[in-house]
Length: 212
Image (tube, rainbow, N blue to C red; front, side, top):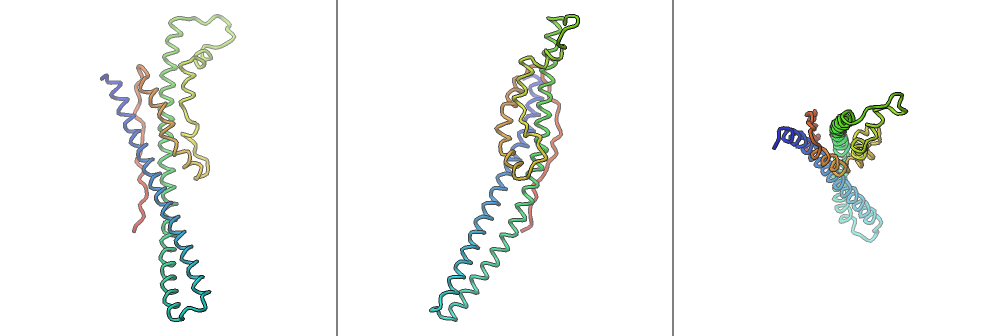
């Protein structure tokens, strides 16, 4: 295995690790959301039971009091847990978006490196085989940018990799597709001759853990 391939695999390995972190953060967010939904439903069911007991005029008063005390105690506990989960969900969303934005910058940087390498390769081929005519209607850069090799890179850059100024809900929906959208770019990078990836900064963003 050449040094270039080893280097590129190392860089891609770091990015894969960050992608795994993002997917893990999304999974945790989904788990918290599911728990919150279950608790919210449970609280609603308990309140419904409370209303039914209050409307039951035939029930023994002492028994009704004990039942209501238990129901209201459960409502208070589960409502408090639901509120706590709501705070955790907000924290998890912020951490997930932060991690996704950092990863999006990295993916865009990889794309720029691939495009630059292809542009340089096309330029070498052009210079070795062609000479621009005097007063040509088009510049050499136009031919380079419109060459097939360079033009193909446009389909490898997701416009959502570096989207930042979007609502949190929409941004999280975008982050869920990162793995799928990164696949074609990753494949192209691995097949690109003479490309030497520059290691990209991928600071670790830990997901906030709320105290029990």
